[in-house]
Length: 299
Image 1 (cartoon, helix red, strand yellow):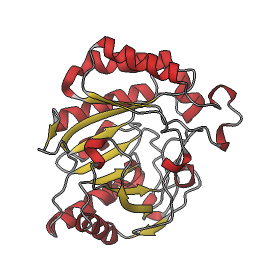
Image 2 (cartoon, rainbow, N blue to C red):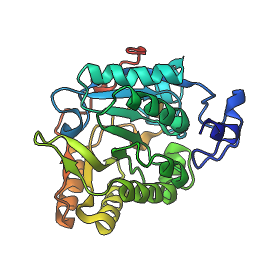
Image 3 (cartoon, rainbow, N blue to C red):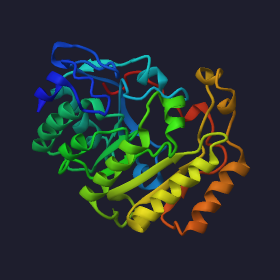
């Protein structure tokens, strides 16, 4: 599995660098896993965090460069600590021991081979809670196929319908093409959503869409695509937590919060489409306090 790093094509960038020799491609990741935080996290959807928390592992580096990224400290500035596969496996077990409802792998694409090896080890040692793959969805289908049998829940973003926005804000030309195919494979793997008696998700897909200022029409196209293709097989999370940070000051059109009117219009559109399985966010989620403190906790 680790020989996939010899000529890395884990994501659609297809850099083909030899990461086992610590050559770096677009994402900046080398041979070793780099992690910025591993702790209980309470700000996911209610069926993911519950009252106990999701065992969230934040990986450093990213194959997108979103100008509005709230986690830019780890995605772009590459903060974090390098660890071994054995240590990653132990982190999973430690989070389970702390009572985590699941293991939540955040921005994991560029570490899929190492994650699979760590999961194999951890499962031998008693890891039994659901595993979540929390991704931007800029994925190669072949990489998602490697995860079959290891991932119980997929939390894919679905960022853009129109490719021009992906190019402008995330430095990617073909986001929709790859994201739509990747999400198809995720749904094919895990099927319809399953919850326990406490309404905690055990299996399934929640497609997340973050509304950006001024892009409500693109948001509507994303929601229509989701409903037309998947109906009630998936849940949809319509997010209004976009927080304009310092790094968007040169993008005046998105250097503001999403208005209540914009958000409500998109939510009402989803309801009119027939979407009934989903999550919306209350006012007040636009706050830098929702951005995790990347301090290498739990590493």
